[in-house]
Length: 286
Image (cartoon, rainbow, N blue to C red; front, side, top):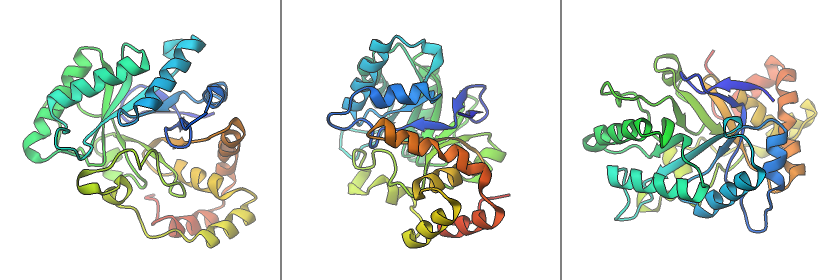
């Protein structure tokens, strides 16, 4: 496993993280989480929109007795499209406290908030995030589904963004924000559980690129001696500003197959990468 810093922070995270989707489904035991931890994965990503996932993860962490310093927990408070949901101070604090109770933790390492609130409420969000960190309920914060370039206000600034590829280069180059993202050949983490206002799925709202040419990807994967999934993960890992790529697996075997992307990455030729840039949504910035 390789490790990277999370944006401008000093926090080190595994370059592959375990996400909610495809991992915390019905009947899934702690085998996948244990296999992930034993493989060197330190980042586990959940969301308050899926309380069941948080409860399952919390139960596993408690039963294993792993050192708290050995793993990173990220969760999201989310504007779920209901009349009583927003990114207000009330909803952020209540949402985070609920997550901590389900996770059976005193704090999360990173709290993501999204999608981006309107201009009138942006300062409120930044202030409550600063308060959350000052109180020790979270160590860092980031945005989800919106560019955070105007949310400083001389308070605690975000260090990362939960976002679909490709992350905006300026967020990394100018603001030092690292991206927690996922492979473009996967539908994304827990999309169905997190509808945006007016029923828009988050993938569409964030700006999903053109439809993937699966046949071309399959041919390219065959020539590269790997699976389509491994190819997408490896390509995602090389994008500028990416701190961690989320994967999901229903079994330890599926997880191990995805972890092989770490061996695929250094073997991708410039020509293959150029083809992937075209197939997966545009060139990666140099």
